[in-house]
Length: 63
Image 1 (spheres, rainbow, N blue to C red):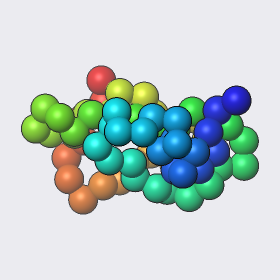
Image 2 (image 1 turned 180 degrees about the horizontal axis):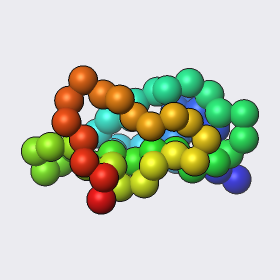
Image 3 (image 1 turned 60 degrees about the vertical axis):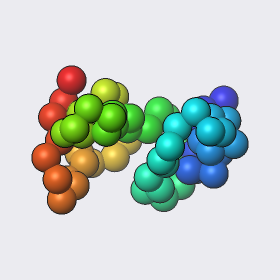
């Protein structure tokens, strides 16, 4: 089953990720957006299928 809240993601991934952005709970377990911020400019590795595109206050490129 896919996580539906940021808390579920944190429970599953633990210390393997340094940051989880909480965009609110999902009604179904559809995969969330994954953004890699480890290389300078943030890069969207996987966009969510159930939410509008990310509009952060910084530059984001899709991979």
